[in-house]
Length: 135
Image (tube, rainbow, N blue to C red):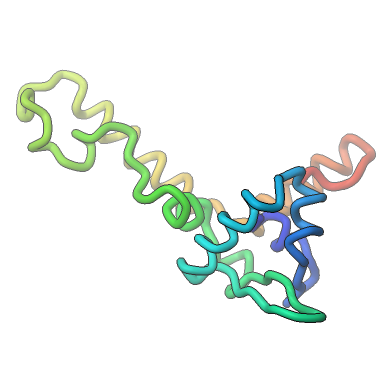
């Protein structure tokens, strides 16, 4: 949804049916996603003619991490990476540092990747394939 909206011209809106068609998502499922994204403040919804869905911030200011957390809650590879006391091996687990680094690296990657980046990557992929953007 976010990448679809990010590919629109600045301040663009799209109807849920347009997004559902372009992204091949069942409309009832899409409505639930849009509702969660609206509650998190990432999209705005408008009713009536000329209505639809739009981003509340530029795509360059919306990260993958924000969207994932809006839909699924905090990113957590392993509980011990977030809550060390949750593990009975806390303090002597040989794998803890691996989980902690993987968690940190994933958060950095997702937090540092914007939807503007993804749209740009999709346009490049489409150009290389000689087709429409891959979004």
